[in-house]
Length: 385
Image 1 (tube, rainbow, N blue to C red):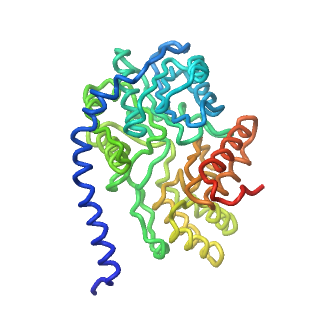
Image 2 (cartoon, rainbow, N blue to C red):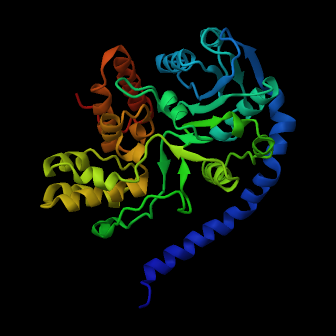
Image 3 (spheres, one colour):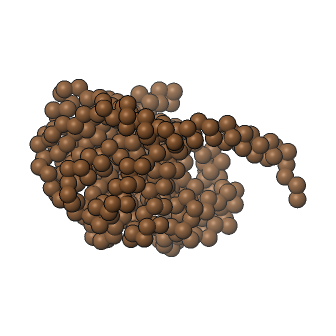
């Protein structure tokens, strides 16, 4: 069967874009790290904080475009209360007031040029900790692309430690083939780390001392190809780190195990499944959103609703697609921020979720979510009450 002309044209255009990007990306991979180390790293500053050094360390990467927020301080308190010495890495310069505020809740505060996205900041944090510690018992990487710890959630640090693995993520992506939305009824759930783009999400990672202290791990970061090409950073960073850990034979896993998610969803009644499907976030995925909306409206069987939910998760990742479900049923401690400005429907669902979070910190998160909606998605309609 011959391909339609429009598909052939689309593929040719895609390959043309890839060829066009080969030169710049190759140059970036070959020279960007050297450029940063020789010319930009000298602008990095390291300030001592008031939290003492300890055997457990957490690098917390921030991008404080609105200054230091209540959620930043709460995250640092949480880390310290759980025995971790927080090392804050800021990809933006801090004013004196914010720096002093952070010093009270951190072991170190690193300010660096905004180069290399999250993994550029992680690299500086890893190398600084390695230079100052002869041995580390536990090491955590976190960033403020997600709020944590959510009110009413489980203690992620304790859960990750309890797994006694070398490498633990709060969540994973792409452990299942991405099914075409219109073929959602054909999905057969089989979630595995063997899939090509499977990775542990980089917004929350824990490493054992065995892994962190390994000279190969240090070499990975020293030679990491810093670049301001976001696609390359994701492939070499988030996906690349996961693949490196697996290939080196380190034990690995996630505190959010969704291998049996199909069975868990099948236990719900049809009305609950319809509500879960209706609350699915699919930013920048119009075809999947259309299928979800049609299925929510017309589905007469539990199987259709389970399959459409699983298809959405396979395509977008569970931490993006189902924040309410995983918080309620798994005690998930993180909430991704970007849906607030990527898509109006996803933004509305995220705001609704933050409104339901309890306590004073819940109010803090709701206020920060509203501010992000106003400042980064001014083209959206006013936020619903």
